[in-house]
Length: 189
Image (cartoon, rainbow, N blue to C red; front, side, top):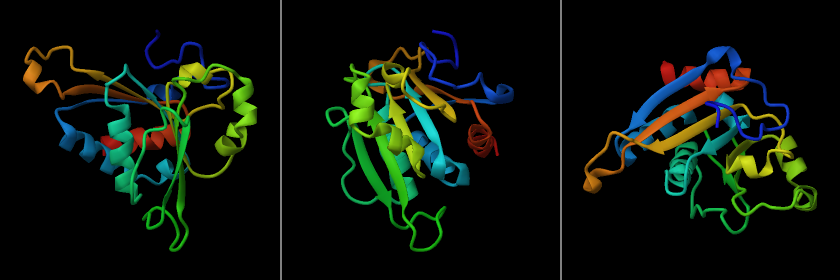
């Protein structure tokens, strides 16, 4: 797989915007939470499409849970592994005007196999609507997905040798659009 690009490419997703890439490391869940909180302060996140790359167990769903909490989602946050999509609403999101909730959709295309599902499930309409879209396993729906703003790649730190402390992750956020560049900028500030 080429760095920063989906294989196969997401329909219409351009190469990285101006080389805007943030690289970092999460030593533990507290570092992951701090990263999520920084992203949650950037107004561009409210209407972004963010894909999440990484093997099973890399921490994609953990990151989503922490980001949703930072945005103000209350209640149980379930993984969409079997449902394909889980809708969420952040009632008191500071990025939104008072009283206006932030709509969030968390997709997991791990079990996505039939492009007809895309239309039947109404995914085209969900991606066209305002709000945040977080997408795990986007390559499984690459021929259907609209362009994405940024890709978050998460992988275990290959330098770790202590199995009792294997929480560390190497992380890369690659921007593909102006909104993605603003997200990278929020992390670099």
